[in-house]
Length: 484
Image (tube, rainbow, N blue to C red):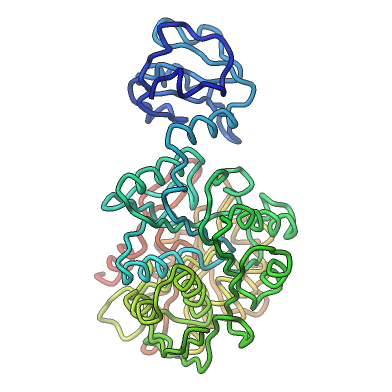
């Protein structure tokens, strides 16, 4: 697309004549990823000021620099500057035009809530595959577009990246995209201009209060997703929790309810739990069917019900939904079993919020282990209020606890652990600051019939120490310890 066509009606400032017919190859807000003849938009973020990276962007081939205040000496001879009042607004407008508003060509399913987003995204993907539909997935584990898999930087990418990913899906004639939508993304307008075919609300419990301040603000952020649902779309709401019921009352669009409550449109009954998984009767307006899944716990029953809502709204038959659910054997880092020759179970889970940890421990208790040995910690530079709460939940739900580090970032790991300990009155626990040593300790004290739960990191294959991200794969750590 020619530059003059891309900015027509968006930018009214001066532009040298020889740039009018420049073929714009792309748009970037990351100077490290700029390609020749791309536009670089210098955004001001919470941690970095994009204007610092203008020289780097030009060195990588950017011909057009968009900023709200160009530093002295920029751009030089190799690029021109477009000075705009609001770089974020300008970026959204040109990205939508450049990529042609791709959510009009892709059915986007958005999932929000504190817990369950990733598992639901995998379930919806599996159901769509059973219905012979290709599906892209954008979420916490990775971004999947056709055969291309991109590493996930955030649960929900930035506005520009979202437009690019949806454009790639549309160009490959992939009709669906399942997207985890975080509260940060909603507040920061990362999903603005995406038209959602379906939006799912899972639950809301304490998390991210370091960012939102209050639960009321957190709920308001999550609720924004449902303002972006298309007229022919659906809002799928879990009515087993107070926030879900509140959201249901305030929505004016088409709503499908799900939950364990028998008054929900999609619900479950006759639930049976075992170490091998979960069985239940799925009850829907379209019929009933017995579900057998290796996914453990009541919370995963709710996750399945959410995916069923999406499937029915998209016209998928009950049999394909049933098969799609049972096709999914595991989700990375969600009660993921690590195979071993030991006489105890080893599970890795992402539970890093109070509610998630409570739910996982309750699910494991239902399968009657001899002991639950929990290895966990809390993240640094994040919501400090949940640390003693998670300590209290751990003490109540596990038989033996190893408190350790979990992405301490710039905080002192010992201080984080002390705040966790403050909630662990009466619990049987010990502190091992080094996470690898903590995992080793948990495995070494395990015996026949025990479950060792390593919680907090799940799919993550790194540990954040200070401003460094180091390789740390818990599966590899477990195998290393078991070989010793």
